Image (tube, rainbow, N blue to C red; front, side, top):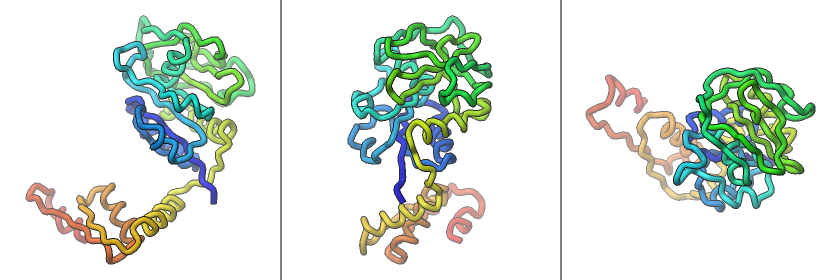
Length: 260
């Protein structure tokens, strides 16, 4: 089974993990990377598109996160969300300014061009202190709200979009459908990723990489180390040794519970 992948670049958003969750709920595989992750690491997953998250910075601040050159050079579709939208605008000659008043809360959006991935959207969730006041020449506005003229845009002759609102949160009523439209209709992703397929692929990769090697796993009993332990055990069986340390500061009965 051929698996698609999406690279999500995190610009410091509190919602970055939620974006990844929404993509996976659409049965498309994705990985989350820091915004400054090197090209070789991000491109190693062979992404079909990039999603640029929101973030707390302003694009005109010193040392503000920016979109790395290889993303543009790839020619792959891009979806910029909030700060990701502003970063796209700033990178290609548009203008982003500080808003007179920070916008935080619900807003009604009006799609301006029929037939775009935004047709499903009505109520959205805004959370931004900056706003776009001038688009680059090859950008076309495709949606507005009462307070935001450039609530969404498309890059002419390219399958790339940007939105000022957050489709990943519950308060954007059709945000999941919008993301699915981008993933399936724009990027051409097949919806064939499931947690089961992740388990199967991960175990197969571990077996191939480890062979007959022995592994020691520091096990805390938390979700991450426990899942890693289960996957490793399924892959290499008795070649895995898990070590759990009773440090004297555990909760009542936790040591025995983890052992069991």
